[in-house]
Structure formats: structure tokens, C-alpha cells
Length: 204
Image 1 (cartoon, rainbow, N blue to C red):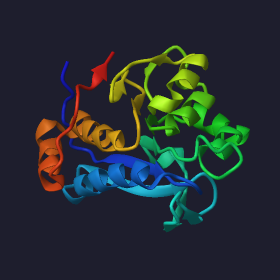
Image 2: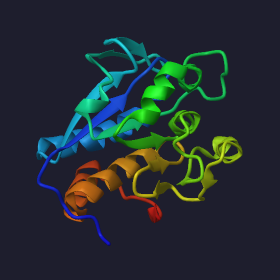
Image 3: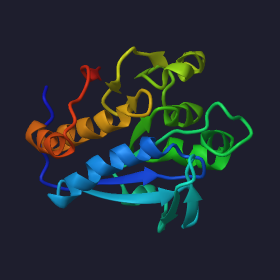
């Protein structure tokens, strides 16, 4: 069944944290920002805790005005970054944050994992036994933690969306727009971006 366009704006929060990969969040944010200009989406940037400044992997500094509030969102986008550096900033501090993972597991939102952000969802138990994907270098870990790894750029099992490495976040965000507002809305954004999606979204 094809997704039905909705008249209500989709409330999307994009999670930012120290060490986040720039492209992981900037690609989806660009797509969602364009969608917001036509009223399809309301997008905001959030931290895991209090508002504040985060420093992305390559030094980009972002002042994030809001802490994560699941009750104010329909979707939470979790980008990746720094997965290979177990002692530095990036997703690993989130993976080790049991309080945050408990909140994430209980949140009534659609989680969208991008790249190694999927490993945060995995740590919260959200990918166990479910079709999912992540960056090629983390797929073995994802499978070892119980994810049913699919060799696809974007995987949607209905209540969980995951995307492969880095630039696939753009395609995941375009799929999110299409799923919520229809193919025409997504195609208009593709035209503005001069971007063509790759592959087929794997759907359960």
C-alpha cells in the first residue's frame, strides 16, 4: 500500500550531539527544511539534554535551542558519527548513556537512524529482530546485536526507518517526506536539491 499524504505537518526533531557527522544531520536537515517551507514538516534541532552548543566531527559549532522532548515530536532523526573512536565524542557516549537509551526505547516516536546513528537505536533495543541497515563498517555489529541486516540504502519496516552510510540520510529524509506527504512533495525537493535517490527503499 502506498503512503497516503497527510494534511498535518510532520513534527520532526533532529538529534545533535558532540562528534555528530556533519553530513549525517545536514543532509536530512536540508531536505526537511525544504519540506517545512511548504508546510509539510515542522523540523527542529534538539540535544539529548539541556539546550546548548555542540561541536560536530569536523569542528562545525551549532547552538541547539531545545532539549529532546518526545511528546513534541512524531519523528526523531538520530545521525551518526565517531563510531570507530570508542573514547572520543560521537555516538559512543550516547550508546553508554543508559538513562537516554531508556527514554529512547520508551518514546512514542518514529525513529529514523542515519549511518552509525542506527547503533544508538540498536543499543536501545529498537532494531532487535527487525529489518535494518547502517554504515557498511558497522553492519557486523548491528547483526551481532540482533538486527536483521538488509543490504539496502534505506530500510522501512513500518515503525522504524534506518539508512546506510552518511549520504543515505538524504534519501531517508526524502522517503520520510514521500511517506508522509506523497511522491510529488518529495520529487519537488529532489528537483531543488538536484539530487536523484539511489536504489529502492526496502519495505516490510
